[in-house]
Length: 311
Ligand SMILES: [Fe+2]
Image (cartoon, rainbow, N blue to C red; front, side):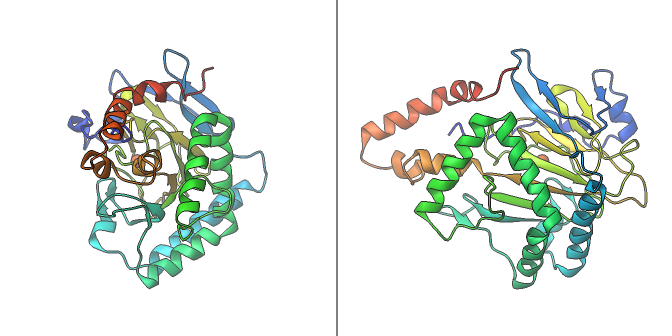
């Protein structure tokens, strides 16, 4: 309790608006980010909430992120997706998560399950140097801009890996437990929150093209009343369990893919509980442990606020 994000979003009435209608909402602000520098979006208390991570100052970068898009596009053709992977709360495009997680019927943290065919493709994508480069950028940015949350993920990941060495590590240095590959070719999302992700921690989203970001692919942060231009090859660190979001349409004939890295909230809960689930404590006979758990749940959100870096 207290680890996961909101279930009820509150912005459902805006589902189905066109890009133009969304931009025209009088309370929406358009942040014209060109992706050449980093931007920290703060709350009123100057806590850094959303982080826009610009493209590296590397003349070769356009080729690197184009290569990541190419391997994902090729991967889509090689994979066979089930209906739940093609139509899901985030939209109507194939997506598959790989790594380790907890919940959804699992009794303990476990690796994601895949068909032999799709696992082969996912392994090729994750081993691609361009995709590894993107993962490294997200990991370094998270360490720099969200140091407390990064440390929490790192300690958690190490503890879980020690407890169960078979847990998968998608990238050698990453603290994120899972990666979702959004195979597109038009990764345009519905209004949603990723309520199972760890709140208030961030997930890292990297946008990939080719598409013209002057005319589509923006991310809308509904609770903040903010539309952010989101060019291909750039990354956002976003508390996706707390902020309702979507991506606006791209132009006909264009392509958009994305890579997201994140950790499930239930992983943090499992470690804090001493490698067991809430239900094991609540149904158990140790009343002191039960009281401690219920008391921690009431104050967790306050502690979480102190985790944000203040600017
Ligand atoms: Fe999301």
